[in-house]
Image (cartoon, helix red, strand yellow):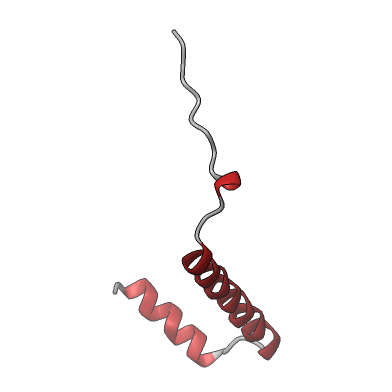
Length: 57
């Protein structure tokens, strides 16, 4: 951890973000966790996997 992160943490502790911003960040984190769990349970769909294009010279 470098000095910049410590200064940012100090600034965040002195002036915490609003409750709305904290709810927004928590909602995004929960969405990412849900997407990860869905991907781990059912796997990545084949129709979303791009096909490799072979180059011709």
